[in-house]
Image 1 (tube, rainbow, N blue to C red):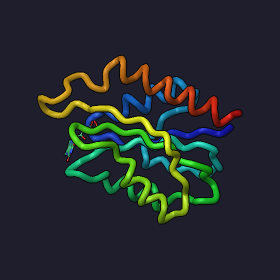
Image 2: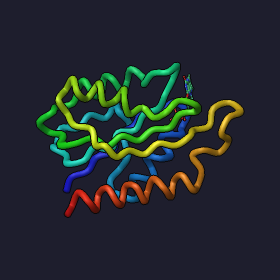
Image 3: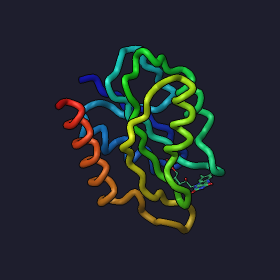
Length: 140
Ligand SMILES: Cc1cc2nc3c(=O)[nH]c(=O)nc-3n(C[C@H](O)[C@H](O)[C@H](O)COP(=O)(O)O)c2cc1C
């Protein structure tokens, strides 16, 4: 099974999740400015919330995806206050006719004085378990 990980992270929080997924999945975590051309079964896509929206770099990446080459996308995200980026990512993917898995991983990310240290060790363990389970069930 072919797996890829792409993420966008301004301050490093979502990158921590991407690196943890990378260890679990055994594939490198790369930023959204690294396009991929090979078909994938699962694309883990990481983003976060800035002024209530996802960054333009994430939008540009999704717009560049070839729907025929991406079987499904799995969302992961961090934010200080808002819920996950799931809804926004889903909307963007729908425009490309690419399915977004119902399962996602989201946790708090540090911002100014809020949520110091998040994602923390527990979050990283949880995202690795999430990735293991998801990949395991996709293989069945
Ligand atoms: C410029 C900027 C704007 C932000 N706006 C929001 C926001 O509107 N709502 C929110 O919940 N968090 C907001 N945050 C907090 C981030 O979502 C949070 O710190 C997230 O973990 C950042 O992920 P990153 O380190 O991967 O960039 C903002 C952070 C930054 C840097």
